[in-house]
Image (tube, rainbow, N blue to C red; front, side, top):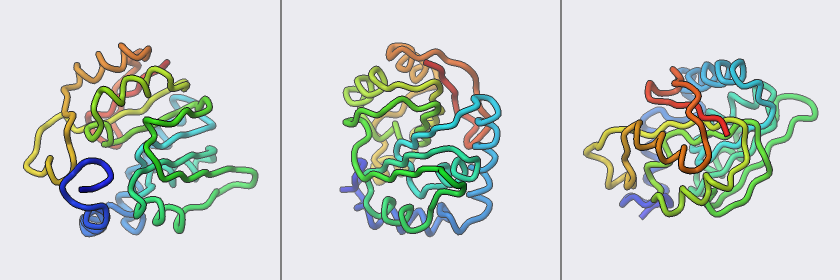
Length: 193
């Protein structure tokens, strides 16, 4: 079992992501998150960023390049090691923190922008609701696959919801739906709190 509930172990997930080109060596993958970062910083004016379940670190990399102070959190030790060896602050005075743990069980300082991209489908509502309710942020960028797939068990997809169901959950936790985003997925949403 992997860190986020799937039947594959963490190493197999990490290797499979690399095989799919989900890594910092794939320029088109990184560029997708650069476009995301550029778009969202223009909208939000964010200066601080928390990447919850940051995976291979492309969103954190993009936000470092945008000049934001970044905090990256992931459960998979292979992700954390990879990001720790590959990413560094881009600007003088900029900070970057990397943690290997369950972000839903942490209390964070306030961030301008928090993101969780293709992560929350791995986490039951019983963990998400308390985390989202206590989270302090101005904006939350969210994306979670809205469709069931043949690989849900391997990847640990246990909480697939429609857009309407996710919006209702976020609203229950004190967020307001702000707008749809075009990056990194066509089902990305931006909330305010």
